[in-house]
Length: 61
Image (cartoon, rainbow, N blue to C red; front, side, top):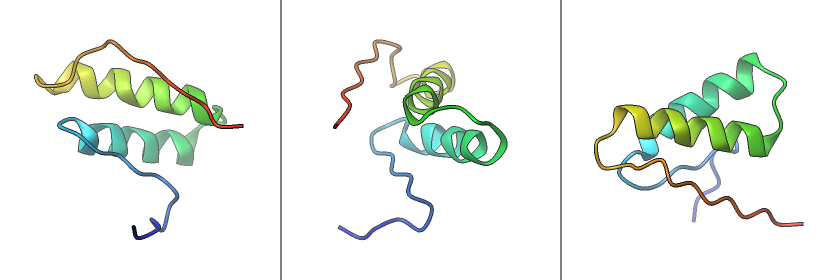
């Protein structure tokens, strides 16, 4: 795997939508990583017909 330049990775049908949303939130907000992931996935679900809004987030410690 190649490490991304900005530290953000997204996969799946709505991955590009979530990726763009996450990039914007990282740049312009002070949200935590979890909050960014959750909001980016919600935004992807709103614009991609193949992405649903049933979100499960697992955090590594």
